[in-house]
Amino acid sequence: MPRKIPLIIDPRRDPMVDDGDRVRFCSTCAFSGVCIEAGYDKSALAELHVLVEHVGPFRAGEHVFRAHDPFKAIYAVRAGMVKTVSVDPDGKEQVLGFYVPGEVIGLSGIYPEHYPCNAVALETSHFCRFSFPAISSLATRMPGLQQQLFRLLSKELGMTAMLAGDNTAEARMAAFLVDLSERFAQRGFSGTLLRMSMSRIDIGNYLRLAAETVSRLLTRMRDQGLIRIEGRQLEIIDSDGLRKLARNAIDR
Amino acid sequence: MPRKIPLIIDPRRDPMVDDGDRVRFCSTCAFSGVCIEAGYDKSALAELHVLVEHVGPFRAGEHVFRAHDPFKAIYAVRAGMVKTVSVDPDGKEQVLGFYVPGEVIGLSGIYPEHYPCNAVALETSHFCRFSFPAISSLATRMPGLQQQLFRLLSKELGMTAMLAGDNTAEARMAAFLVDLSERFAQRGFSGTLLRMSMSRIDIGNYLRLAAETVSRLLTRMRDQGLIRIEGRQLEIIDSDGLRKLARNAIDR
DNA sequence: CGAGCTCTTGACACCAATCAATCCGGGTGG
DNA sequence: CCACCCGGATTGATTGGTGTCAAGAGCTCG
Image 1: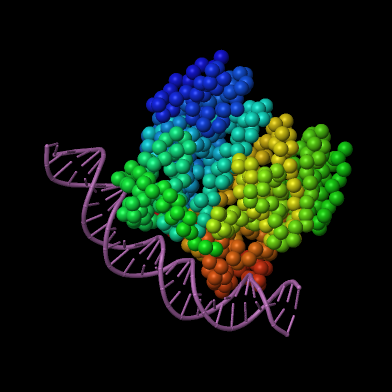
Image 2 (image 1 turned 60 degrees about the vertical axis):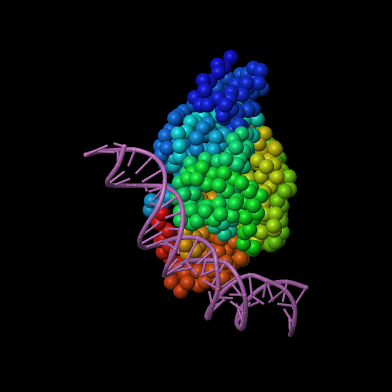
């Protein structure tokens, strides 16, 4: 019988999921979907438990994994926030994404067998670490788990779409805020009151904008009554207005 | 004993892979990697054979699958060229990628269980169609196949990186040409003499540039002696020069 | 042979980057 | 406790790269 994994973080934000005696993973493991399928099979559950490892805390600026490290595991964010950053030979950095609790990072390392990017904590963060060889071998015996891994990978593919579009700076910014808000809401956080732990520089890099432009856009949105912003604390006031801005793209 | 699948296309470009009596799929199936692992297990090979279907020809402009269609299969390009295009509610189109023989499309439909984009043939094209439920259930019994599917998905994730960067129009264009050239070469085609079957508009949409800018960039590269270009026929003359341009990005 | 495209080339406008100055918050040390 | 410093954030002035508009050439297809 798998034991309860002790909680590291605030139980109100990250309660144990304990459905009778079926699912016994922390809610992050469950939300990430990696474990959820195992809840109905005791022996598989036990096997999964062995390969999950709770790691952290990582303080702001610390690396969870680095580019070129051999690919060994995927990580689900339990608490905090991370960015993934690719660095090309000339040393130029490109922020690939920001990840909130419940989301999974590291998947893009499967094919090259090395992580293609750095993962850097933006604030104090905790993770569930899943050894990939173990989980992938387990997946061959658990169709539901394999399915879930496919879904995670496919989902990640879809996430890059937002960034792909050629829109105005304002539209990209609005889309970014809406997207972040929705992802927070999906994980049980407030969808209107967000802590943006990343710097303006990071946001700009991610959205292909100068940090100054990010700043200007945020103040403009504040002046228009769409958001309230104080430092890195953001409140979304007019969500529909933001969505409307996000759709104000260039016609092609 | 699995029978030989009849060839639809030029055998010089797409020979059967026939290693004694082990691998017996068309080279596209093999190159795509979906089948390669089965070659060492006769019964699995037979199973795979059943779920592969050669479809085509699709003429330029015809859809292989459409956005919102239920996700049923993935497709490996056998011959020709395809683009994938997402369409947002307002009808704006965004070209997500171009695919050359041996590459696989449709993977991003796994999670939403519907294709998130249209796949449109850019010239007369043929495909290997793999029923996904069948291949994924087979994967639970074939660790190598599952591995390969993970790799394909992960690879696709990496491909979006090029487009992510915030570079000058020239750098993106150069990177695009180099990338296309390498992918052609990887599949056994010439890496210097490419047929660009997509329109300037498609290229522009993909690279987030106006079609006019694409045109201007190509003529400039021609004037600089980097490429020779006549309509949609492209010859790369100075590959190193192109690579150098591609790295001329904005410092961050 | 004309219709309707894609493609090219030019002139101009505009958005966002750059440069620069200032302000703010947090940490450090005297 | 305060002064100082430093990186991040804001705000302003200016520049330049690309988009847009427009006109014409070339191509394919019916």
